[in-house]
Length: 171
Image 1: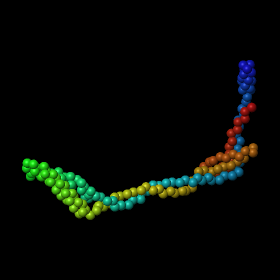
Image 2 (image 1 turned 90 degrees about the horizontal axis):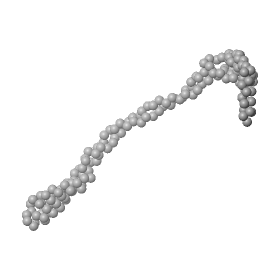
Image 3 (image 1 turned 60 degrees about the vertical axis):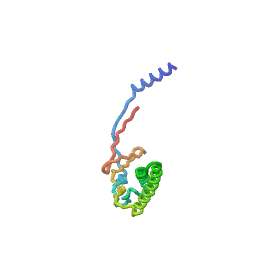
Image 4 (image 1 turned 180 degrees about the vertical axis):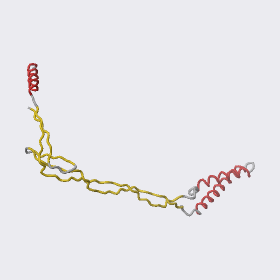
């Protein structure tokens, strides 16, 4: 195994000593030259905006019947406690709390009935959209030639009459 590896390496080395390269240039006539275009699409953003009416609550007490009843009950209880005396003090406190609760709830409901609905204000709303434009962009010229049965294509910024080839031959 080692002997064959050494032999192959020696043959490769000796061959490389005797290998030569010839380089030369040639040119071939262009048989077809045509302009090339590419479709380019550009997207330009723009905004569509409008004013929209949005509701704004002008009465913050809407739905606060329970809060009105609670405040009225506490106030009525305190007043009832001040009025009563002796064993009737408890009854006066409870009665004042009940009456205060009813009065507070009633006042809160009356305030809500006077509420005519939300007020509105204008709010600016915008949406970004895109406008697309497609156009043909000139890329260059596609020059085609044949060399020994092979098709050669070279792109350039102008039409060519001949294509220069650089050829290397190793032996």
